[in-house]
Length: 315
Image (cartoon, rainbow, N blue to C red; front, side):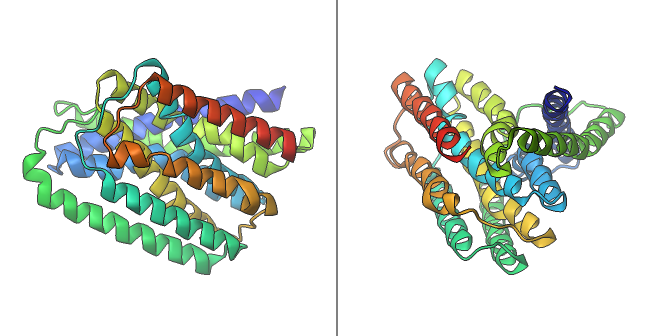
């Protein structure tokens, strides 16, 4: 019982701290005169992916690397099927006004590279270096594109931005995020590992389910708000950007601090589900298709089916 309370407490701390870090970073960047578009593509994306990063690195250091891999694969699958499915089911997502084709192709390329690295596993510092190199190449490309188009996007105002926010308040948000994120990550990893040990559940399954869903909640909150405001480009950009961070930066960082083994069941099933879920965005991106309630129903049903299969075949 105490482990469950600790795990839930860790998730709550992660969510609150992640939100504080994003708000502090966005307002600091705006105060320093950095374009809002660049802030959204970099700092905000990193802020929402910070829980996955800290949990994955902490998992490897704690001797449960399966939690790191399960967290990333489960999170990416949840980001598409659940994070896009729930808003589409209840509010619907209109066709995107922005061109997300390039980012979508980058996400698919990163997914294929990640799968290749997994088949070459265990993931070592060599494989991690390749993933990190891909991440910085994509980040540099996004930065250059943002700079070239910022004159047309000066009116972009990311959620949480307040140009009048006092300096001490910005510092408080940043401090709360930087202190709270590692604290929450430690609580969640320790208690999730204890739950897995007590129930005899592999740590990879805990990563695919409890941890993956928990760390996807910041993306879910952002996407729900985007759906309510009819901003499909924000929703898609949030999911695609988060998946890129997860695949390249997070496992790249985890692989630098320790070896990450790849279970056989991942090679046979979970990686391919993640790829299939990613490819489901093709008509949304290339045909500019609206995601209505039918889309939401299908995506949510597929995620529920995936979780049932995982729990029934791997526990």
